[in-house]
Length: 340
Image (cartoon, helix red, strand yellow):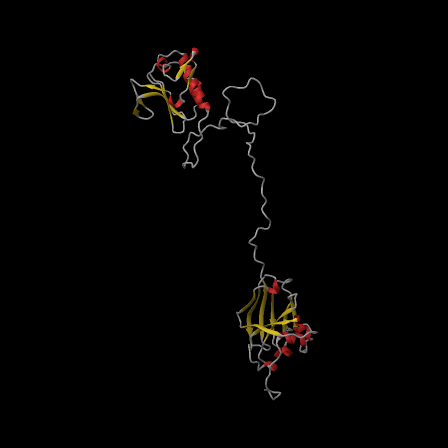
């Protein structure tokens, strides 16, 4: 026990000093108390003097800083200067102390107070969720100067900005389900034969032919989906192409029309139950195919694996006259051999 008035020179902590409000010194007591509300001013920097040297405080620096929490607790900051009536304190001498007290440290109430932290110069105390706001409050001891009278401690109080939300501000909207019916877009292909008269209303039925011809360029990567099958227009073009030559009476077409499944009607119209890629006839002479660079046993129509006509070989068969325009409708035709 301390049995003398000259020993045990220790003062109350900042929370109690705020409540007692007994000291005057230079100026009145209210000048030694500063209230900070971080929700109003997010960053504040101040200088503190110790309670042991409050009477030498000509610059009127605060002795106690209270941080407003807007709840039932209060946070108080003081400079625990080991001088004068506080010269024999036994903990955290000449450090910045941070105290939490219930009832906000009000004058009319008494409550337990707790030492939350004591800081040397350069150290920082962090309240991870200040006043249950979800925002961090930091108290940093910038410097402590004991070479002057009174000694001065500099502190900075900062309420950190809110962390950005990881959730979207608004729920994404959903669009209506796509229609199961095709949209009534006009075809970009010309029809083989125009209608006799204009229809009064547009048709909304889907076409049986592709809206655009197959590409003549190879894709950069193979498709994972099956190729589009050639339309009946490809066969129509082949039939009309051969029909034009049959009408001209070439000797070649006598053997062509003798094929069991190819019929040459009066007037030269050609039909067949065969697939148009199978319209071939035996090659007896000049059977070299320039396009493939090989000899072959047949002439006629040759297709790729997708059923599109790639070359027609009627070379050295005595065909004559202009080339039928229907050949232009064979979108993937690469070679047409008609020499004789």
